[in-house]
Length: 296
Image (tube, rainbow, N blue to C red; front, side):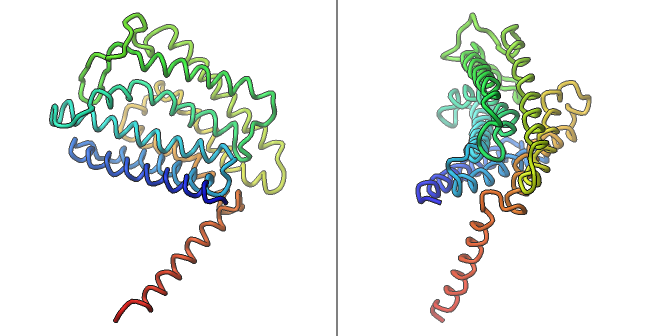
């Protein structure tokens, strides 16, 4: 573990905590705190914590950076959502930058989907693809997500769904329209859905080929990855629009990092259990020494 990777992990965690404190404060002011908020908060915190631990120990493993990116992007996106709602609805004009925050909402979610549904399944646990044959799938996913993200960013109208408010996009292109309602967008979503299924297939094949400790590491994560197939189909599930459905959505999103955490802690993946043990020991020693050295 290098000091650079440790500093990177600490910096990302600090940014995540700062964003989380900001969004929780604004969500309370907007009246948006509830079971769904805590469910998704737990999910993305799991991504952030596990990702930071992996980055600190194995900075060359892309799984850690992927998980960390999920946590940071989700926290930034939700913060932008609460910020824009506060600026345009709760207390109009009270804070600067509301339009920029609203603009972030037009594209961040697309990138987040790829970082959750495809790349962790392709890379876990080694941080590398199963074989060079899977590179076209990874590149196809990255290309489709890049295109749909750019098209979302130039959507001529920014819609804030939670408050039923629309504002003109200063960088919007009228000819592009709403990517989610266009034939191009539909085709890109189909490509992304196929890539998601392919990523799960890659994980299953990796699991079938694995032996010994690696098989144990993959067992829980493979199960969690298979459940992620529920997410692209959620719009067709009647329960999806209910409060319980939103809560279950958060639980399913949390499963991959939780499963990775189980592999890390129980099967010594990346030796991160050593980091945690040392942290606990050093923390306890510091507390004891502080107790005995403090003035009476």
